Image (cartoon, rainbow, N blue to C red; front, side, top):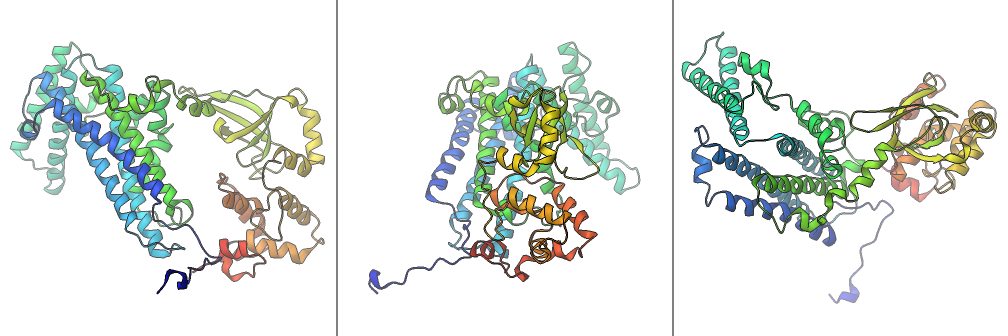
Length: 507
């Protein structure tokens, strides 16, 4: 058939982005993966000509210089494993047939890739935190030998504990001998260093020979976060919850729909995870070369510049250290108008502010609440010193004022459009107060959105959704309408516009 006779594919109103990578994304990921992979391979070759020594000295007592090399060789191994895994993820996505809409299986497949990515993020973040602390704390090569001995000790202790539990407190004598040997190596090296403990070990558990003899991963992570520079802190993930705890959740079953649909099953989410993992791996290799005392001409310094530690990351970190003053009028990331009433600076240097909501708070019983500075978007210094005057003004003209403060957003209400935000929010709020006003339209909107119209508008726009918004909508609606009006699948509702049909359709 001649090409001009071919019928072009018809885009439907239900068209959604497919999960196949674009050519641009493919090239970007190739570069992101190969930089740390090649960097790790180059360092491996400089540490040992082959891997026989690394492979055969797992339990051996080696010289302190060799121990440091073995430690760094293992770092390179973990980085290459992560990069190979990322390349496999990319290849899988390239083989996915082009499709307009993600079906159930496609969402689950992408979710499985995301799960594996988050395992790797946790593992690499843990490794980066260890290297940051070695860079800041290590004085002698014996510390690397202690680390490897402690790793062996932990494995033997875990094996012995498992046998004891399974066979009613009986133990394996050969395993116990290994435990005693590794413990003695650690104590001998501590004597050489002239100390009784070391920064990465739990002294009490080491004394009692109870697993794990390492300090908790959380403790090491938080310690690294305190001494990390801006770029390293971004790679670590800003905080324990973002960088370590949340990725750990993928290890456990999650039966709700928190990781299903929306951004979790989108190509950009996978690309974002891959980019983050690559960034972590680059920082790991930068520190590995630094600890080895070897220059890497093709490494992170070349990619980000000689002064990369003073790069844009400092500006990104700055939003968590945003300077506001008590009495400032602000808009939150969820576009709630509020007043700063208290401030706090954490030991990490991050700022948090207690705010007083000037219009409707997310939950009525909490008119004031704490919020990190990164979630405060707008500060208007013009209003400072006039808080009482403007507080009274906003109570009278709240909807107008909120619209003016957020006028850069899309305020146009097209029927029952999901992008209806400030005007629709105020309109429905007024209808709620005056129940005789347009009851049929109010009921129709409630069926689609619940009372909190802004929840779905923000979700469609990709802005943060307050974790309390759905709860607030449910509480308010439950007393007036059956809860099914909020939980009811949207496909059952007659929608006025193609946009709504597209966004709300169900398979």
